[in-house]
Figure 1: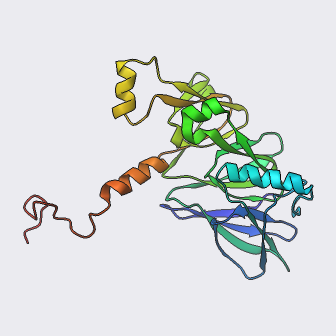
Figure 2: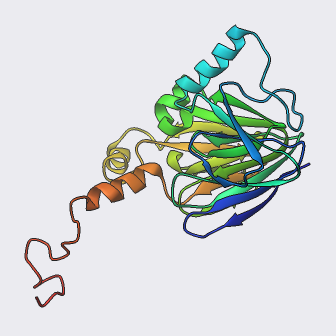
Figure 3: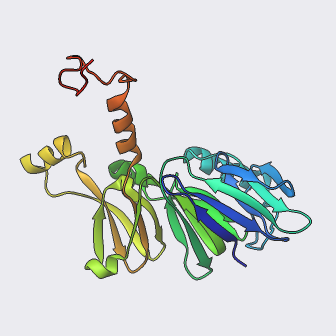
Length: 265
């Protein structure tokens, strides 16, 4: 049974979820917004087990738990999950991303999994298994953001968020392969092969692109037949825009006063 939900908002969407008796939703710390009082919350270091609705925390050995937490720490993720379970009937829980942008609900049916960029995950049913996937040292060294991915398998609803607007593509419709700015990847199905490749040979042209084009020497590649979700804004782009305008404050006149800024004061 999937989670009933409604995506609300435009510039920064949020997901209002109706959770029924017997269902549990988990999220990373910092993604919860508000809930009704009949929804209990518990914070644990372990992830769900068993791919069953309302599944408890994994009951493995202390070593396996430490290994799981260690993987999340290495990936720069939250060490703990927050679990939300209604009592006495259905309840409402609302989640949101951390950047202005869109959200999507991925419905897993057990036949296909999804990979998501490590900051995209918002929340999921306890029937969805969460894991950390490393794309390999070579790809990570070249691609930066693409080194660490989160993997979701099982059956149920997964909520993801990104920056700016989303575009959904299938590389199979574009010759089987597309090249993407590494910071623009939000999520893709596990039938897609991810890689990182250099944009042409190392020469004057590629050096000019790397130095002044803002793309570096490498792009991510997505190959195969499956759904891909990209975002129009990157974390680096947002940070650069904010840094460029820091210190301006309320003074819009600039160093030459109002003469060139449109002010007649």
